[in-house]
Image 1 (cartoon, rainbow, N blue to C red):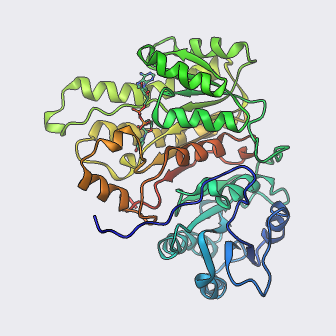
Image 2 (cartoon, rainbow, N blue to C red; image 1 turned 90 degrees about the vertical axis):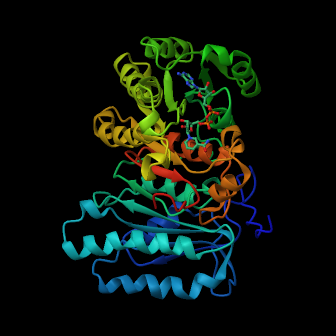
Amino acid sequence: MGLPQPEELRRYKEGEPALPGPLVVGGSGRLVEPIRDLLSDYDFGDDDTEKFGGLVFDATGITTIEELKQLYIFFQPLMRKLLPCARVVVVGTTPELVKKADERIAQRALEGFTRSVAKEVRRGATANLVYVSPKAKTDFSGLAAPLRFFLSAKSTYVDAQVVRVNEKSTEAPANWDKPLDGKVALVTGAARGIGATIAEVMARDGAKVIVADMPQAGDALSEVANKIGGVALALDVTAANAPEKIAEAAERFGGLDIVVHNAGITRDKLLANMDAGRWDSVIAVNLIAPKNITEGLVANGGLKEGGRVVDVSSIAGIAGNRGQTNYGASKAGVIGMVDAEAAELGKKEITINAVAPGFIETQMTAAIPLATREVGRRLNSLLQGGQTVDVAETIAFFASPASSAVTGNTVRVCGQSLLGA
Ligand code: NAD
């Protein structure tokens, strides 16, 4: 079509360095030394470094509006020194938990700064923001997993996002390449598309995976299970006894550590033409089923203490979409579910988070007519669609035992899509 070719994005490969070049850590807040410690195995640049693969700025020391100038002083000279697919991470203090007005304003300002940097960096580079609770005073172990995720090729299609980290302490996995070692995970809607890739990534990361899908998906589901040494479970997620069936399937592995609610459907029609069946089925599969299954598994003990729940929302739940009132409502409801359930589940050390994918290359998006597809693909800062693996890596990050300080977040996997920005 004569359009410029977008950058080929770096994606995770075992044994390859996390970043395309050296890292620099700047800032003068309370976290700058802990950050250096948490990343001690990274390659740090020095005064002679010409090009950087990653920049981290600890902005927690910024407590007044005037001090925002520190961002300018640190980043301005470095903006031309970024390698393709470099990673920028700004670390701040969660604004809602800050008492002093000036500091709260300054910390909130980091969002606009980071999102603008994300739009300025080029060639596959990204910028993201991590807010750390002010209650985290001496133990910053919870910061390691989000930092490492953002400073890696696993977050390649996650751009201009904000993750909040609480004060919980965590243990680093014995091996960051096998963070799910010994864990048992269930992935719904895993016979194809994004769900099949989530199952593959979790198995790669060391988990035993139970893959669930509709009974009619039988052969495709068995294929996925065989490929990853997992177990297939024929399951309609809307069935009243779904929590019991899942708990039963997980029993022989000692129960579940991770539940990924990926099964989802669309039944698009303009609202004026939509029959009640389309409305009901989308709400039932995308919203009621994940809620019932999570609640059922917590009640029947199928999901262990310290477990992980990951939901799949969509940018349609943030921006809205013509012809998708039912889908948009269900996917926004998923974000509400994460907000509503984080505190209660936290009492059992269970975390709940969601991903909101943007344009992901799947059978579904391949069926969109060429011109519309090309527009959908390119309307983001990375100028391309994402891969199913990009969604799966983000889910695996939330599912990691090292992510116990990360709950109540919805992260878009959309390359900083212009929709709903
Ligand atoms: P897909 O249609 O390829 O796969 C969905 C799977 O869910 C299918 O295998 C289907 O059989 C299964 N499923 C549907 N209803 C079920 C039920 N009642 N019980 C059990 N399984 C059921 O879809 P996908 O593109 O891989 O999407 C996966 C998830 O990501 C969905 O929640 C979707 O809404 C979301 N999402 C996708 C995109 C994208 O660009 N593809 C973007 C945003 C969000």
